[in-house]
Image (cartoon, rainbow over all chains, first blue to last red):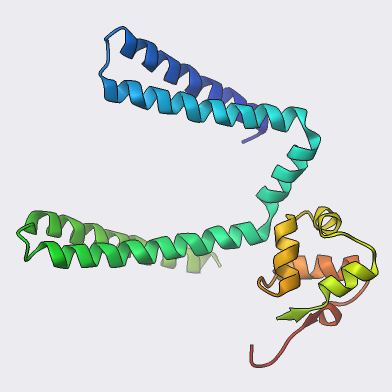
Length: 133
Length: 66
């Protein structure tokens, strides 16, 4: 996505967010949807600020381009994703085992299924990626 | 893996930011490379070596037990 496309996309998101806030103020939607609109507007405004800064500040644009192409940052993101996966699987397994004797067998089953799905998706991804490389 | 990036950068009168700009990486990456905390890809290693007019083996010191 180019920076101009990003600005157009986040302008649309900001408009949707503002629309939801107005709808909430007029009583057409509940407070949860209004809150979602406010969050969407805030995030979009931040992204738009960055997008316009990228257009007007060549030094910032160079810095952003370098960050996007930086192989170490990609490596760090990959490591973080790996750790997140490992922690989530262990956490789900522990919660599933702990909740069962405490009377939460339905929740324990659900968490166990989620853990199994995560592991299955990992193996499918592994097969796909190992064929690609 | 140890390397001579800091030594070569100083010898060529470059700041970490200047080298980062030339290599199109962040300054933090240059810092991590110099400290030996991050091992670069073969492509980045080649670009670093080429920047100093050396071969990869002359910049990066590979030890067998690594």
